[in-house]
View: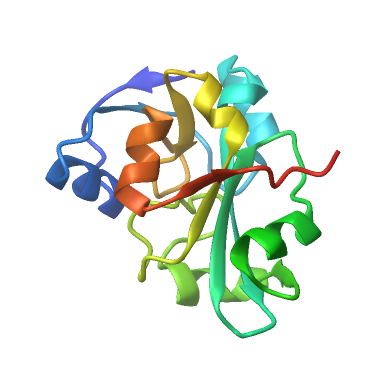
Length: 162
């Protein structure tokens, strides 16, 4: 069951604090990675406001971050176009930590090793608050999507496969 606490402090949370961005932390019990749909179901959260973070690599070798609802798939053609690339593909699971500093299931757009070009699905603008990973498995951050976009210098775009 979800508990509201402030005990956990991840790099993402420290960055939000430093930028004076209001957020709420929700923690849950989870021993290992399970996808965002299962977490949303477990916590009774709507898929539309529960966002996952996907890290890709473009033809150029540059990395790009895409944030979209947990029940949607990224449209790689749309994503590549947004990034100004010929194509983008997901990075390998084994590379997530090396590229982002996070692990699978705890990857969040805030506080990666480097500020990569970040794109948030435009549906996020329909909500006062969205849910993203808190920077570790078992922690979520609930925050305003415009605040998220501001802190990671993101653009709102259409990146979801129809």
